[in-house]
Length: 239
Image (cartoon, rainbow, N blue to C red; front, side, top):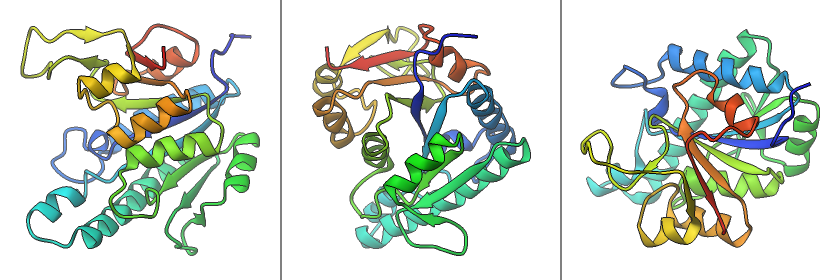
């Protein structure tokens, strides 16, 4: 039996990560890859929750900057996260993983409302719980939703899934001399404005000593690797 470093985790997936090679929407190749990786760890007995963004369909901040009312723009963004959650749910259930989508916005025909105790019970039964709708409030990002839900379900760590293999001092796509950090403190992230998560989410994790690991979701086997304690990506901790 392989030894697990973590038994209950929250996976934060941005909407942008679901784009893959597309300009808009959900790339089935990406959801299939993520689903396969989640199945791999669920079969090891790991309890997995997911918070998903909506940036592949809609970005509330951008819409607000272009004149739309910010509250309205953010609510549209919340609906986008629900579309992504249903897409990921479909990909997971096609490979035999039982899931539940819980939303912060009531939408009873397609998802459960978020109820903490119910979410924890689903996890104990080894169902993957996908949290959608952000926090249900405008002005809060899905990063903050990820930190909040992780604390509510008593996850041991947040897995921040990205398209790059960790946190760098500058954009590694634009700058060849970008330096990767293996480990950071929350204060480092805030002082250097590294945008691992937004500042509200980072502060929430720091205050509650909830670590974050940032890694490349596009590489098959990375979720399992982190679960097993391999040094993949960048670890952010209090100390």
